[in-house]
Image 1 (cartoon, rainbow, N blue to C red):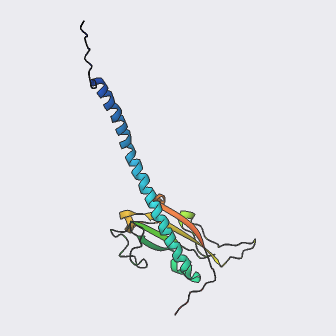
Image 2 (cartoon, rainbow, N blue to C red; image 1 turned 180 degrees about the horizontal axis):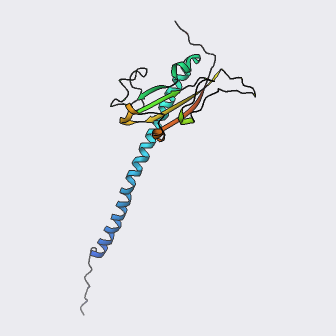
Length: 188
């Protein structure tokens, strides 16, 4: 008696290959669709980290400055930074840094004078009466509010206006307080 062996096919049929390719295509299209969202999230996280670094640098500078002249020296002053959060050039003049190729971030520091100053538009834009810790109208002279506004402006540095309503969604605002610790700077 002869045993007949049935030939077994080794491989995939055309239908199986087509289904597998369709599943792979759907998965790839889904993954490719997530790339722009992931890139936006990565860019926003990078901006937030650099803005936090800029905020800390400016806060350190404020804390080291002479308290009596904070509002005169820093109110309304703009600073310019590169893509890594490093300050560009002489920010007092700013002409060489503002709008340059490296200019990516702009920061504006506001230290309003109590009773006569006003807050920037990003935090309401109202007049600033100072701080009083009692029910009276005595203003605490040892406490100043500081508002740091930072915007990732890229190539728009030269015409960027912090007070323009169109630009408000680009501005990150940090509000902090500076206290007079009684430390006086030594002058030689």
